[in-house]
Structure formats: C-alpha cells, structure tokens
Amino acid sequence: MSGPDRTIMKTRATLTDVAALAGVSVGTASRALSGTGRMRAETRQRVLDAVQELDFRPNQQAQSLHTGRSWTVGLMTTDGIGRFSTPVLLGAEDALGAGKISVLLCDTRGDVIRELHHLQNLMDRRVDGIIVTGRRTDPRPPLSGIQDAVPVVYVLSPSTDPADISVVSDEAHGCRLAVEHLLGTGRRRIAHVTGPAHHAAAANRALFTEQVLAEHSLELWAGRAHFGDWSEAWGRRAAETVLRIAPDTDAFFCGNDQIARGVTDTLRESGVNVPGHVAVVGYDNWDSMALAARPPLTTVDVDLTEIGRIAALRLLEAIDNSPSPGLHKVACRLVVRDSA
Image 1 (spheres, rainbow, N blue to C red):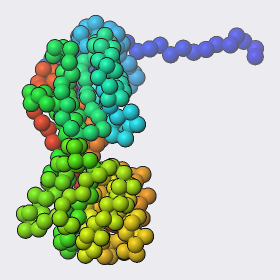
Image 2 (image 1 turned 60 degrees about the vertical axis):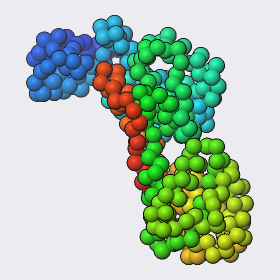
Image 3 (image 1 turned 90 degrees about the horizontal axis):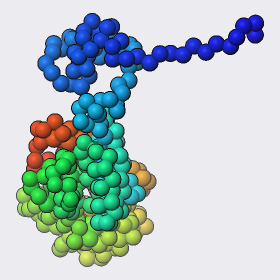
Image 4 (image 1 turned 180 degrees about the vertical axis):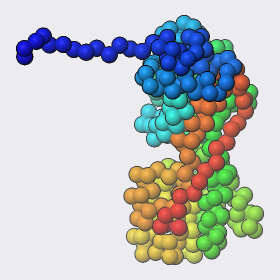
C-alpha cells in the first residue's frame, strides 16, 4: 500500500438530522416518533421516512428519561418447555416489536417463590407491563405484591379477578368446530377421550362437547366422557375401552393431539380404517404430533400466536391508560387433515 490505511467511519444520525431532513423542528420529530401530540399525517410520515433514510436509531436511555418508560415488557410463564409459551411469545413480539419494545422472558416453573423472585426482578428493571401465561387453562390468582404498579395481562390461564385483563382461547368455539365437522361428515356415534378431569381444559372440552351434541339430540357415545392423561398411552388404552364397550363407535373427538395420536394407533393396529370406518379429531394442532400421526390429524388450532398478539395489544392499551378489563376470547380454527 502506498498510503496510510484509512477507515471511513459512518457518523450515527441524530434526531436533529432527522428533523432537518423532514423539514420540521426537533420537538415535532420527537413527538412524531413517540406518538404523542397532534400533527398532520403527512408530517408524521415525513419524519418516519427520514428515520428510514438515515437509519436513525433512538437512544433508548434518553427516551426512558424523557418519557418515564423503560420500553421493556416482562413475560412470565410456567411453561418451561415452551410448548405453549413460545408461540404466545412470538405473537406478543410481533405486536410489541412495532413499538420497539423488548420482551424479558421469565420461567417460573410453576413455583410461587420463583414467581415472586422474577416479579421483583422485573419491577427492579422498571418494566412497563407484564404478560403472565402458562401451560394450563385453569384460572389463577392475580400477581401479588405489585399494588397495580404496572399493567398485567393474563394469557391462557385467566385471572380469578374479573377486573383484570385476561386473554384466553374460546374453547366452546373450538369444540363446536370439531363436533359439527364430525356431524357434517355423517358421524353420529362420537366418543370423547380427554385429559384429567381436574384440569379445566379437559372438564370444559367435555362439557362443551356434550352441549353441542345435545343441540343435535345426541349424547356422548360409550356412555360418558373418558378422562385420563394427556398422553398417547392413555389414548391407546381409552380407544381399546371404547371399542370394547361400543364397537359401533364411528368417531373420536380427543382432548389433545397426543391422545388422538394414541387413538389412531389403536385403531390402525385393530384393523379399523381411519377415517373410512372411524374418524378422529384432535385438539391444539401441535405439529409434531398432528403431522406424525397416521393418518395426519384433523385438529382444532387454538391460534396461540394470535392470542399472544391480542394480549400484547391489550397490554399496550393498558400502558397508554386505556385498559380493557375482563375476559377476551380468541376464536379457534379447524385444520382438516386425513383423519377426518
């Protein structure tokens, strides 16, 4: 090299640069980015265009000092394996990311002491709000010790306080989709196999299934709902029991996809054609289960990502002092595959 090595450093754009390019004052540019104050839509758009052109990145620390917000939200979950919390987190991040808000994930493992520990850490970090979720749908007590310091939204497991904000799956809708699909394919002798009776998900899905059948002057086949575990092994055993009690069963609606996969295993091993002789519908649309079943499962998708997105939007409203207390239900959808 004949001359000195030179490195060209790109100067980071400032809010003043954004204001100059947009042709507005620094104060107007700041209000446009924070979403505060009234201004013409084209003025706000000019500021946003300038931000994109200059690749401007706001100083979060300075913003926090100015607005009193940390631009962070806590997500507390009891679902350590992430089966339910990960889709909820992805949906929440989609909604929060548009506002440049970061999410801090805390796994309480269902332990009250650990929950209090994480809650204190989130409060020390001055989070703007908290989303609480888990792997079960049983109602849970509100977080203790925060005295309404920050807004909280409960997801899947609703708060026992009706004044809180809770976002849940509409299980009555999910069961209606499943049962009416089976009825629409000509099935009338429908057995229901589900999880533990003391779990709200199992008890509610059995109740809603009976209600939909009753609307069509039908009852659960094999005499009752069959409660057990959320497992393939239980699905296999339950299918054997139902076929022994009621060999003319023409459909199984199962409380989750693991149970449904166990049911299809027993039917296949017994020489029963699915769905030719017996149709099977699962619940949750857990891909690793539903797609690996033989045949692949028709199942109810509770749309966890949409639940997370709705929860984040309700939290943002609460942070902006426009809360919507009460129970917010998110509709399910039926994913039709080969088993029904």
